[in-house]
Image (cartoon, rainbow, N blue to C red; front, side, top):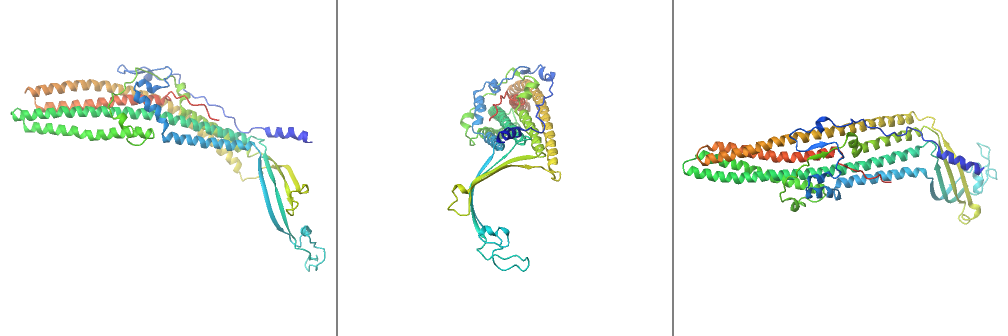
Length: 498
């Protein structure tokens, strides 16, 4: 009999797996990027090509400080640590799901004091008998026992074991869902790393842009102080008026007023970088205070193909894993509709006193299967299946939206990159012309051929043009960072953890 039972139990344990199997979705992507993205405008110094993306894109700026910041950002960033902690949570959830494959074993011991009713037929177990002497019961006609009180002690120690056969795959689907949740959490960690690298590069490039604008303002202050001195000298000689002197003083004060704001923005940018690296405010001041030129963008930016971008981006991979997990949960809910078989067993010692508890005669055991068939749950189980199916449809929509957003993000980032290059080209022409106009107006005023208002207007135009050019140069660089981030940053995800 036992030989026949073993193969039967193995067959039942193998069972079948109910619910839909996950089929990896195929993203619908165009064969290539739009012509607007690949056919760069004539003014663009940097253009995109459909070649394999540079996985270490930050090195294309050729700035050692930028490379150090990007590669060091992960070491102490609290957002990365939080995402890593969430992976630990999902890994333990998977371990809990895996435990469902194994039987449970519990050790138990008890000391029970039991008093049995004297009118019970089991009173004899305590040394008395309802028919052994005593007065008859006037209501039932039965004798009331007059022997010892029907009270006894039961001492028991042993082991309880139980094993639920995974006939319809409820445990297997649960493990499948937990594994997909773990993969989704890992891809979210990859996405956090990608975002951190892009944010560190962006913050650094913004810092260099602010330092460039501060330098323009400082140079303007020095030049305007010279102009103020010249105007005062000409006013003393009768070749300028007190109005000209007042205008020169007002222009100088206006430019000086921009310096404290720029200084505060520079400090905030350095603190933002320190925060990204998980360091205290001011920790990077010694390394970043010295002004450095704005890192130039590369002439060619490799962006690959749309399908490559979708497969590379960790947020798309995370959404796909979430869809797989939700598909598996449909199987978990469906398995609840089917019968479940549980093998229960108990082995131990039982006695009415401790003297002979550990003797062979006190041994006992029980083993056998139990069957549970859900008959009526008020519609709860089928509603749970429909709920998980609805959640799966929602997860599928979220995945498609993530894919679509990824494609649009790349195209929009490239449009912004090209557009800012065009703006920078125009601002460079404006800055050169404004510089020449300011120098000419100053020469004419010095020679007595022009008015101070000409100098004032020319100087104001020159300052605004140079400030705008410095800001645009930084925006071109940060827009390129946005392009790399939209492309998935050349991210190569780590293999899934077990």
